[in-house]
Image 1 (cartoon, one colour):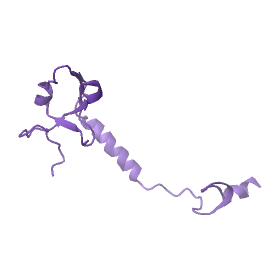
Image 2 (cartoon, one colour; image 1 turned 60 degrees about the vertical axis):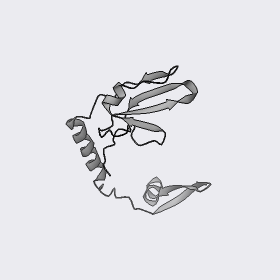
Image 3 (spheres, helix red, strand yellow; image 1 turned 90 degrees about the vertical axis):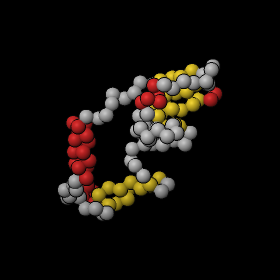
Length: 122
């Protein structure tokens, strides 16, 4: 299966760039930017089919502004750097892990204070 979604129109192999949704209660067809994931009652359309879209008589077509296009390489690099930074192991803070004193409880939640903080407060 290809990671690029195709146009929902029969025999069209173009990549989808818009998503079409119908709001039956309002007799409205909404055409907006490509949804982040596939919805069962939405249709992905290529640029050509989105441009030629017409609605049934009495229906309104609402065209939402499309996003400013594909992200630039700078945006992609910044995102990749942020992911790398988040994945880096953090150095140990010096506080013992799993050693604490319970100072309160509410239902299944507990309030813990580290043993070091207790010793410093005294």
